[in-house]
Length: 265
Image (tube, rainbow, N blue to C red; front, side, top):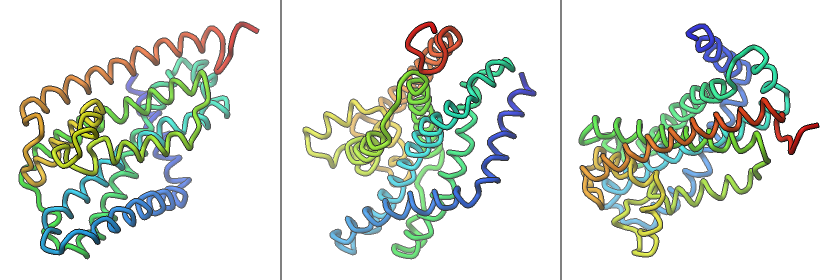
């Protein structure tokens, strides 16, 4: 088992190095267009409020990158994995395709880390080094770990579904953008209009995002810190469990009927 895990890690690390220029292009293009959008919004905020809003915007982009990286580097990469016949190849070697796709989190986290450093550099130049200060590192780490668990689980949902049907890339782009605005990543829940706030409460990413903002600037979560910690942990466990069950079902179907097969041939 340990040998297979090392092989999966080596596979993704090697591919990341071979496609390093594509990797760099992904970092710049993904982050720059979103940064332009967020900085445009900051232009309408009085300069004296930048010390409060700039850190929130910075961490909103970082959290959104967790979601985007999982969607595209796990869920979106699956079409390549399927089209090249790698699913069958791994099944023949008794290696779970799910383990390979979970390993894509390494690539996603690498992109997230590099992108976050780039965005932090931009915000530091605009708002000063104080934009990087946080009140409580522990809560930031807890929030990001819970958010990462949720987003990786979501990426695995997309990957599992891609074994059965196709998913339009445009739909994923729209869903990502909606999650950034309505999912509580960009704006604290307490600042959203009532109708949007109700919607955001049903989007799982909003809850660890509230924990992160509490750690960054001490902003009290809408539901309270203790409630958000318990709720986020519970949701993360449920999402990870669903991803595990869903992949077991899909792989059973793939072994029986083949990838994207409708019935026996």
